Image (cartoon, rainbow, N blue to C red; front, top):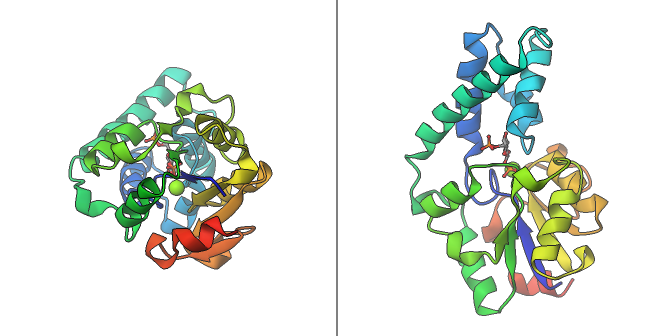
Length: 215
Ligand code: B16
Ligand code: MG
């Protein structure tokens, strides 16, 4: 194992809760109610696709023009970005800073594979930008998670084969993408929600680099 690829929301920072707040408000404005169980389906899924899933959930798919859809997605993002303003380096999830610092000391490259177009902003807020050799630009993708494209590109940024890389994910769509390109998958979160992960942990404080590079 020669490199690591990290999802962002739910792995490096608990920004998933802000996505939920912003989507819930937006959905309520158009008469749709979402709860935390439904919200699981939005994790790792792009902004536009998340909106489509919400409309489908509320039986309103096809009711809005492309222009209105873009406005709704933009409105959600504005609210989300406002919430992100509150982020500080303390908001990195447990073990993240230590894990990345150790990887750096050991010269093990780390990359970010997040569906979020706000990833560079969030990493700056967390003071973590310097720890990565690259961030895959989600705008460059032809397909989002669960397609493995984002993880393959992350491996390319490190000049590694996917089989030499360990991926960290909190969403089923992400675990599916990691496994589809032959990476080792570490799932962050609850076991029943992450099918197919090779290893499950609550957060990065529960695993050491030593045990991972021996895999
Ligand atoms: P944005 P990840 C994903 O990030 C989130 O899990 C998902 O809820 C969100 O819709 C997506 O990013 C797009 O985010 O609206 O900021 O571009 O988990 O892949 O790091
Ligand atoms: Mg995530």
